[in-house]
Length: 99
Image 1: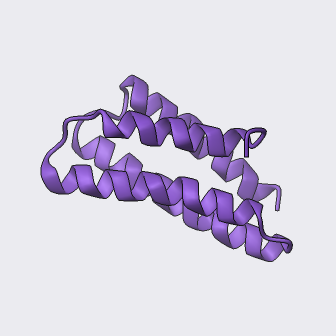
Image 2 (image 1 turned 180 degrees about the horizontal axis):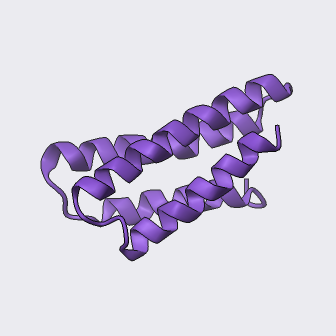
């Protein structure tokens, strides 16, 4: 996984999320969604078929969108963590397109 740049971005994003001070339910939702991004990227990377890879990468992308919604609700979409998430979204979308 060390050479899987998108996964590394997801791990970095998750670590940044842990340091945010958000309202209780939104913090929990953001942490779950950011974990889902990393886990689904990892699972997709391990699948032998392109169809399965695309399915897991698509699930990861859905979780990225969920994270974007939380950051937008908190007014953080243009913050450094929002920019990191935008980069993660672009990388994840490209993975899906390349399947």
